Image 1 (tube, rainbow, N blue to C red):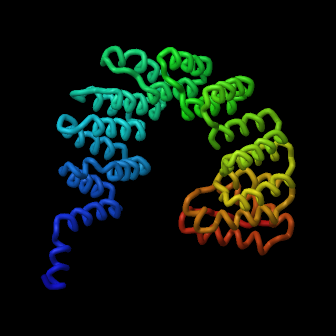
Image 2: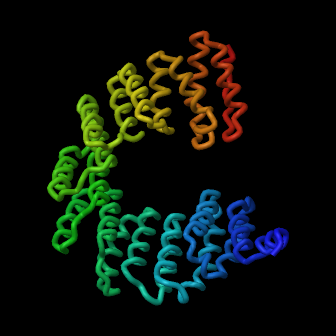
Image 3: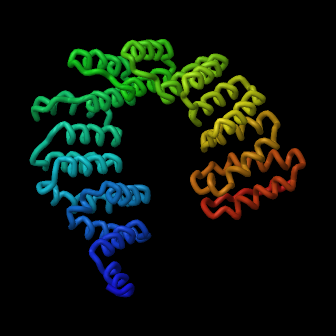
Length: 373
């Protein structure tokens, strides 16, 4: 076959056309057209097996607030439930939950010809994601016996998370005993959910009890476990102990992440200690850890409050950098505060630069102004 022939063959082969169809779906900017392309692709079994296509489509529609189109997509997919495996319906249920459409998740579940623990967990997860926390426990109590299925660790982790979200911390803890009675060992997700709930809600003593149980069960703490404890220490005004804990994290070969450092910043801010906050900000950079939106929202106002407008200005320049500006939208008042403080300190050129950076930003519309005086 000639080189021209091969090019023509590749261009018009089914594989090439399939790849082109998927690529067109991901590039589509019109949401109505996106839905139509998605429906067309899903007429073929192999595309109904591709999770990324579903995730991309529903995420795009939900982020745009087009829940009417999400509903259209889900309704269209229901016709494939009877000819697909349980995992297909479970995926639809999860997508409904991520969009906060629990009624649709329930409808998909009810129409399934065969229901197992996979779809049961998906339904509870959808209930959780739709903020129907009290209903999660009802499903957990009623459906297993009705469907003759045995809840697994994911089932228990989901109901524990629901209890924590409701503030029913005692009920969440009791689930550990129930898991033990069923011969089921909790895992890191179980304990991290409980640690987050207790430490971050001012229940430090209870958090320590959960921590000790985790160690007794030989479940190794992860960076998320330590971050929960860091927040607990900071909320108890025990920042010095939080600093020591970061040292312990490192000694165990665990790399602190941005959440670890943000917890320390909260502690230093509550103590009014800008010097230590700045020192640990530099330490964070040395650690190869990039700041996030929360980092800036913590440090910029604090620097202004302490009169360090140069540091606040440096952070605002980073905010307007392409990487952060594209990813995060900051409260305009935070940035305007820095402009005002710069003018008050007679740093007019720096203030003008921030105003101009706000106007030139192509990702978000920042209307910063120089004070009239």
